[in-house]
Image (cartoon, rainbow, N blue to C red):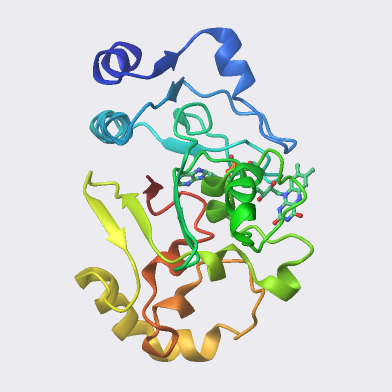
Length: 234
Ligand SMILES: Cc1cc2nc3c(=O)[nH]c(=O)nc-3n(C[C@H](O)[C@H](O)[C@H](O)COP(=O)(O)OP(=O)(O)OC[C@H]3O[C@@H](n4cnc5c(N)ncnc54)[C@H](O)[C@@H]3O)c2cc1C
């Protein structure tokens, strides 16, 4: 029922055979969790359709880039959405604004190659750079050796287009928080200020400090490091 619903709803490939499920049962970690199905989305509408089916059928959904996570981040028992196959383009590079727009499955080295002719680069450089995707880097707030100098992935993210679990799409920038998030930030502002250490490389837990007004109310940056638990990146 899950497989037929997915096949009827998406343009991308849907794999439910034993070989595909075995391939996607692991990432770079020691864990092994065979999923029920693997979908290779071809467009944002495919992602929305999968999200809707998973919501209706109560099936867990796990987004995946290159699967180089070493803590089981990119595996799950329900549906795996692999962005690396088709949604892997650098959409544009604007050298004057020093901004690039990318799809989540783009490999870091591909972005670096597109930025290099302009004398630019994406700062964070995990040693998996020839494989890891921007979606996965955003999921994990990836760092790399030079992040001490150039910052973590969170510091290089300006805006995210995300799909929320209820199926709505949101463009997250900075300066204004959606109503529910604004309420959360106001309610817990004091605790966020006092309980979360102001370290440039704090990588564990949700980065709620980015929601504070003194940090620019940056929901996009607060979503970096959430490992796909709050939203799927489009
Ligand atoms: C040999 C090796 C060296 C490494 N070196 C470093 C290093 O130097 N620094 C470092 O920080 N890390 C390092 N890593 C860890 C890992 O490579 C990085 O975190 C990398 O950025 C993960 O990218 P990925 O595309 O493989 O993501 P995946 O492992 O596929 O996914 C990572 C997380 O992001 C989520 N995700 C992926 N795509 C989306 C999406 N579209 N929407 C929502 N969530 C999404 C996943 O669900 C998962 O939680 C290394 C790993 C290996 C195996």
